[in-house]
Amino acid sequence: MKQASKVFGYTRLMVAAMALGPCEAALEIVIPYAKERIQFGSSLSEKQGYTHKLVVPHAVRLQAATAYMDEIALRLDSGESDLHTEGSISKLFATEAANKAADDAIQALGGYGYISEFEVEKIKRDVKITCIYEGTSEIQQSIISTFRWKITRKTKGGFYKAICQEMEKLDSDVNDAGCRFYGLAAEVLNNTIMLVHDNRLTRKQHVMFSLADMMTHVEIGASLARKAVSLSKAGDSEAEKVKAMSRIFADEVAQLVSRNALNILMGSGVFDQKAARDFMETNSYNQLVCSSLNVINDMDLVADILFAR
Ligand SMILES: Cc1cc2nc3c(=O)[nH]c(=O)nc-3n(C[C@H](O)[C@H](O)[C@H](O)COP(=O)(O)OP(=O)(O)OC[C@H]3O[C@@H](n4cnc5c(N)ncnc54)[C@H](O)[C@@H]3O)c2cc1C
Image (cartoon, rainbow, N blue to C red):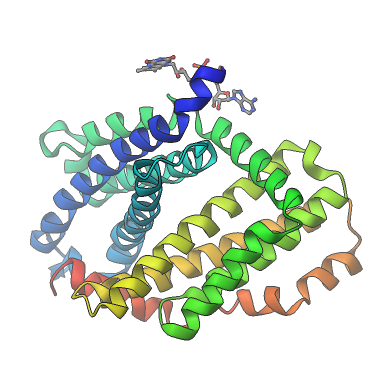
């Protein structure tokens, strides 16, 4: 087990990368198909109900996963060890995102998706195994929640506080990359971990898995924010696209963090309604739920770029 733990930082990153490749391939099949397929008088690529459900969220998550995995790969290449939690975060997020993307690629091609000619059903079969081997998604959730809970306690909240402060700083540099919401999400996450610890809820696996999803999304989101800000400062031609993707993902992170915090507060049976209300009335929680501002327009913008409309 000790031997295995030493290599999980990079072997799990490798499996995460193995999931992203097919996910990218699936999008490369879906996008041209949607531009050509005419239904009800216009191409599928013109329909928000199609693009914003079956394509844009997956392109955004692919971008987010890539940003995080690039950072971890660089840290590994520079000789850092003990990145097994980061390996778990990479694998959990990338493989689950790719699995959903592959599933929706079948849906996006309709009947053609289900037969073998268009290859998306093969991609789905190839991707599913990445959620299982090298440690299942549930084992990754267990690792992430345990180790991030421990580091949060050890640093007295400093671990996620640092992400929160970094996001506030990035937001003051570039204010349209969604950084503010990643910072707020990190703060709500930090408060939730403390609450879970103080009330001995770490024994409940459902609560810990909810925390793992919050931790994963906040950390992946912070990487995407860094990438968006860095491209924006460099005047890169990809900057507008990646900033819009970062704003969309910030909304996803904010919604997941607020929903999971609420689920723990209201669902665990430990807190009375006043305690739950007090928590939700903290400024950060109330601000967090405002993350959806203009998100549909941002999805339009990303769809315009992806489908070259
Ligand atoms: C194609 C393929 C290739 C493989 N290659 C290799 C290889 O090269 N080397 C190798 O060592 N292994 C390999 N494996 C094995 C693979 O790593 C295991 O199948 C995988 O880790 C899951 O273990 P399991 O099958 O025993 O499922 P189980 O552990 O029985 O899991 C069944 C379900 O229960 C969940 N579960 C299990 N424990 C918990 C828990 N504590 N809390 C909550 N939920 C839990 C799991 O997440 C899963 O959803 C391979 C498997 C396949 C299918």
